[in-house]
Every structure is written in C-alpha cells, then in structure tokens.
Image (cartoon, rainbow, N blue to C red; front, side, top):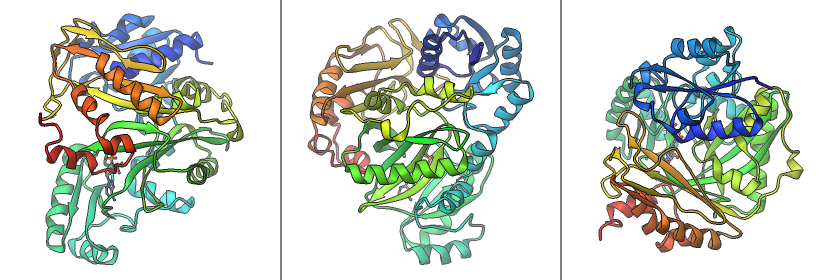
Length: 450
Ligand code: ADP
C-alpha cells in the first residue's frame, strides 16, 4: 500500500478522496491555490502545500509545482480526482518517471480513451456497439456530406478531444453541415488545442446510461451496474440515478457483461465508466471516462462499496473487492448536483454562504466541501455539493429526496436547489419517463417560471 497520498484536486472530490485515505490509514497531502487557503480539504489533510495563484493553469494544472509538492512531502502516490489532470496521460507518465504512482489507469489507456475517435474504434473492436457515424475523423466538407447522407440527418459533429459537452454541433439539414463543422472545429481548437472532429447520428430521444467498471490490470474486471444520467443541460449531467428506470435485470446484465469483458481483454486497471446512449432497447457507445466520476456515489449507495478505497487498492496492486457473481444491487439511489447558479438562468452565483444547513437522516448523504461563512471562489466550477439519497425502492428514494431538498438551507448565494424541488414534483420525473433532451425542453417551456 502507499505511504502517503497527495490529492491533486480541490472541492468536494478532494475531501471525498481524503476521507477514503483516512479510512485506509494513509496520510494525506492537500494542495491548494492561494484562493483555496481556507478550503476544507486543506484543513482536514495531514499536510498541505500551496501550489500557485488562483488560475487553474498556474496551480491545479501546474505539473512542476505538483511534482515539487510530492518531493517536499515524500508522497509516493497522487490521486487526481476528476477534471484537472485526471485524464492527462502525460501527467501519469511524468509521475512514473519520478517514482510516484498515479492512482488511475495506465497512460496508454488514458490516451486511447482520451481520443474519442480512437476510443470508438477500440470499442468496436472489443464488441461494444457504437453510435452510427463516420469511421474516424472527417477532414473535408464533401466527405462529411457523403457520410452524413449515408447515416441520415440530423447528425452531430463532435470533437475528438471533446469533454464537458464542448465542441458539439447539430446539423439538422444538409445545408447546416458546413457551419456545424466550422463551429465545432473552432470550438474544439480553442478548448482543447485540437480541431479534429467526427460525425455521429444525432439521436432524438435517447437516455444516457453508463456502466461503472473496475479492473485490476491483470485481466480481471467487474461491472457495478449502471447510472442513468439523462437529465442534462447543455450536455452536462444535473441529476443521476441508479438503477436506471429504463432497464430491466436482463438488459443490465447484458450491457454490464459486454463492458466487463471488454475491460478484461484490455487488462484495464482502475475505475472506468463506459458511456452509452440507449434508445429503443439498443445501446450505443459514446465514450469512456478513465477516472472517478462526479456521480459515483449512486453506485456506492446501491452496491455498498467505497469506490475510491477500491480504486486506491487496485492502484497499489491489490485485488478486486468482489467476484462478479457476488456483486449485489440494493435499493435505489439518486444524486442532485447542487450548483451555485441561478435556478432559472443558470448564471453562476459565486460569493459568501451566509447560512448553511445540510439535510440528514437515514439514507441521506451530502458530499460537499462548503461550510457556513465559506466564500465560493469565482475561479473554478460552481458546485456547492452533491445531495445523494438512498431508499429501498425508487418511490421511497424520491420521497426521501423531496424531504431532504426541503431541509437543505444554503443562503447568501443562488443555488439550483429550487430546480430540484420542482423536478421531484414533476410527473415525468416521478414516472422515470425522461431522456437527454427532456430538461432543456422543460426549461424552454417555462417549467421554472412561478
Ligand atoms: P463529452 O465528452 O463532451 O461529455 P459525450 O460524447 O460524453 O461528450 O456526450 C455528452 C452528451 O451529449 C451525451 O450524454 C448526450 O446528451 C449528448 N450526445 C452525445 N452524442 C450524441 C448523439 N450521437 N446524439 C444525441 N446526443 C448526443
């Protein structure tokens, strides 16, 4: 096992990782920018190192500063959390060159899945069904038109290096394609420094269903069921649940086994999420994330496993926690991402939290790094925290979520709590009857107007 873990992140995920380390009895090092000197992860860690000024590129993305922090503190492993350097293969390699373990997959798998064109090619070769689209990147407009005619409009132009819903443009008709290509390319170039794009059939009413996996890097891998992340705004997840109201046991088992088998063949190491769109009973691969995800707690709630602890164990050469046949799914879990944003306009609302009272009680979990009097800095994402509830059934889970949302007090800034209070009282959500475009339509139709 590792002697000391440096957590190369901030906010709720830094705290989440710190808790796992403490339960494993491993000392922790927090890193922080000057804007985060008062942050909770800094207060609770055994040691902390300031790694630079507020902009992420000068602090949380500053590889030389992180290496120096490992050196100074004697940390022999780094947990990257999500975002920042968590899917940066070069960072993993540089750490290895300095005899520091990266808690995550091997660099070649990070690189493979980081290029979405290569990821799709690999998925196909491993027997995973993919969204119909171009076979590789598209370079010329004329090629793109020919491919789009083949798959049929509407089509989606996507960035090979994409992430966070950026660099994605729909073309409903042929004469919109040239503009969609140009816009997606320039957005991708600006966001990722890479303008490679590819085409996919644009699905009309799919659900986003993703499968959680963990591998030991020696050819053993298990799946931990799925998460339904279909409630999205601007292709970003807002509310997640497990199990998916759209799947039955047979479908869950079928897609889980396809994914676990693929990971066995890859000899995949660590946690991973294989994302699909699901429409008319069919799964279509879109991408794989090679890190812990924001929505991992819903899987923890129904499997009883601590995913971060297991992630650290396999990174240190340990075995998987269970055999596939021993994985059990109990009850239902839902997560709401509570952001510091106006619940109707979604404009960010950083600032000081004047009063804070999180909900509690059986089956209620709040993963957050804020506290009363804390000022949310304007430099990073706008998350206040995640409210996760668990119940024996989906109905019990929704009732519990409703009362937990009503208990939750965050004053002084705007939050998205009112949006969730509305959603849990909306029939389609109660019925589990929604798809990836549902939330945007609900908002456009004035769902949040008084
Ligand atoms: P990113 O890496 O930017 O998150 P993804 O490929 O994971 O991009 O897609 C994010 C979201 O965009 C999906 O959950 C879905 O809502 C939407 N999306 C992606 N591909 C398609 C598609 N072919 N048709 C319709 N929606 C899509």
